[in-house]
Length: 114
Image 1 (cartoon, rainbow, N blue to C red):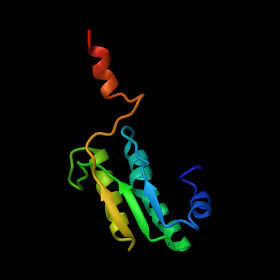
Image 2 (image 1 turned 60 degrees about the vertical axis):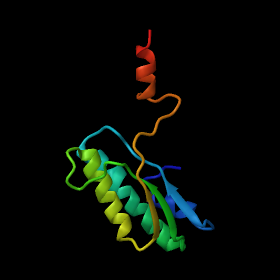
Image 3 (image 1 turned 90 degrees about the vertical axis):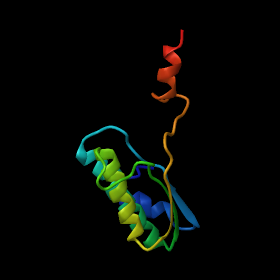
Image 4 (image 1 turned 120 degrees about the vertical axis):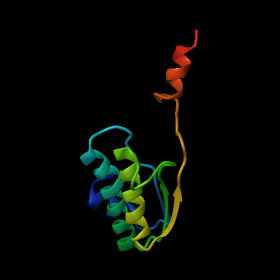
């Protein structure tokens, strides 16, 4: 579903006990970070409240900090604040690095191996 669509979020919420938000970006400008890490969690919280869904598991970042040196860290912290203020049953996970089969983290190091 297009996660930034409030109508689609509203359509997806009813009938569920919990929501897990894994949406994030690592690169971009301030508007992109704000849209994905702050505005989207607010939209998710609003859709949950309207549908009566109370439990949210939100994947943030180990380095989320409102005074952090990067836009990523600051936007992640602002997103957490939005969710803490939403009155939901909130669990925030703050992993360090998340990687997968086609990531640009571990695969970079693997490619450097002789």
